[in-house]
Length: 564
Image (tube, rainbow, N blue to C red):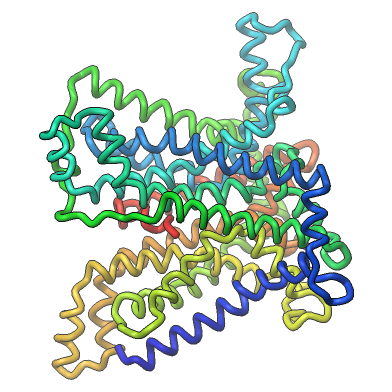
């Protein structure tokens, strides 16, 4: 491929990211650090730390990120170790089911948790039937522990990211290193903590970074739980004052700086050392088959975690089939009408059409950019290609709420991008936001495919007179088609249920995507929550196919997509 093409890709990507990634971040920083007379000031940011309400929100957000990551690690590491080292009944089925929690954003599962833990929900009804509570007596589980409810739901939704990274890390460990340690008397847990776990550290850190930032900035679950003492919800509530109040800017700026700071701190402390392997790992072929008791333990652990993680979504399914569910263990009335309404209601029908259009357009943009960026990163030798690769992965490390708020800021009246103001028409910015946020999925999938495909095929075609571009299109692209399909499927499915961008940018009903429609329906009295649940189930069924399809196409390399 010519250097001209490579430099063109580098230049176009730099302009695109400059306008729609760096510019909105700059607008946020300006709003948080620039006074009304145009001078730089720290007064707004300092006021955030002086205000008890804002300070408590930051502490709660940090706690959400930290405890969600720790709990997700406690779930993911044993699952990954068992999956990599042992063969047991149902392993292939569980390997697919374990990915299901990431097919929906946590805030959809929050609908089910509200039904389970609400004052008149399943748990209290079950306790009454068992005699632990008197009839009519209730416990407000969510009212007393909304914070921990958010943490648990985030962990159960995000642990597959850590699981994928841990499985990929274990698969890449040279078995000779563990065997050498065992021959020297280092066995069992000591070998795991002194040899295996340090070798897994780069992969674990990569996944932990994503989980922490996503949980730290989670917006949907706190909104559904009515938990407003957290920074993300305080920012969301301040969107209406974006033109006159500097404190929403200051909050976003603090959240951005905190996210970057936590990432760099973790990178310095935990991500500095990587370890080169002498050979490829052979665990997959050398997995042991334990005895009956061992298989039962492996099966039981996977089964228990899978049921626990899917329980909120199972509750959503039950809500979607119910006509009445109040103070009972199970619904007292069953109906299919919610599904008919979910596909026929004016709000839901237009939201499905909108999401399909936004996500399809964003995926087309991502495939074009992703293939070009991956080709330059893997096949070219130009200076700056590593910067291009890092640039393409940065959206995973920057909170979506920061980008969405930045788009609002940069399109205010009098700004250069005023013509993109989402209040009038959010479609262009929604497509761009989805494309920016999901580009890493396509880039990493394409890079994985190109790294597996020898360049000699293209060189042979060029030696026979085939132009470089034609050789790439006719020879290389068909060979990496499975990787491109997997990346495009993931980008599309994740864009279909993007939360932060959808809730903040779509402000008129005619432009609502699915996630905004679900949120609005949840706030309606009467049949609103039932229709919202049915809409969530339709989305769940659709996305289950896409996530499992991507898993089949990429296998263990799926974890590499969720790395910064």
